[in-house]
Amino acid sequence: MFGTDFGDVIETILVRRSIRAYGQGQIEDDQLERILLCGLYAPSSGGRQLARFMVIQDADRMDRLNEIIRNSLLRQQPAAGSMRSKGVLRAQQEGYRFAYGAPTLICAIAPRAFENAMADCACALENMLIACESLGLSACWSNQTHWLTGEPELRAVFEELGMGTEEDIFGAIAVGRRLRESSPPAAERVAGRVIRDKLIKS
Ligand SMILES: Cc1cc2nc3c(=O)[nH]c(=O)nc-3n(C[C@H](O)[C@H](O)[C@H](O)COP(=O)(O)O)c2cc1C
Image (cartoon, rainbow, N blue to C red; front, side, top):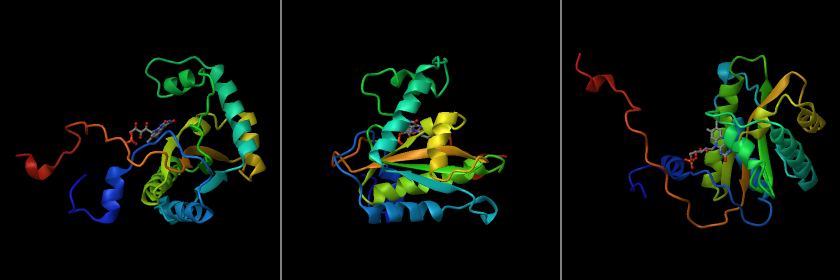
């Protein structure tokens, strides 16, 4: 797709897409281990490695989470221009699955008081998205658990798994088997996002 001059990692980054439909069945344990390893090896602010990863694969727990998220989003009004609006509207649909029915959800959590908590979690989540692509799996960022990290009912699910009261969820990825062989093409890149001083006459 991008020619043959790129290394494997770059090719993987370029072909990775957010996929929102998954094949039947759970991902393999060794795939999960490798994805998490890539999360653990992400850069971290000050090298402190404060981000932690909570994996949800239990179908009952996922259903419970889905119910909590749905009920919470149903109480919210979609606000024009807010990134959350689409998620609020989607929750109103029949058969709503916040993670599109993916069998695995990996949530990145970190101490809320840590100034680079979001950045650390985002680095790790992106590493893991790239790992999923490399392993031939489908994945998509899922922001609902982040939006609702302050909701007591949602927190209770994560506190069962060991999330501390001083930690928040900063993002998550849904992961599953590939349903279709090929991914959709990437959207056109918005022009003008790269500024190089060498090309600007002073
Ligand atoms: C911070 C962030 C939050 C996102 N939240 C969601 C989400 O809640 N649900 C979803 O389906 N996709 C979500 N996405 C995925 C984007 O919609 C997706 O990356 C974008 O449409 C570009 O598509 P691509 O990843 O296939 O290139 C999120 C991505 C980022 C970086």
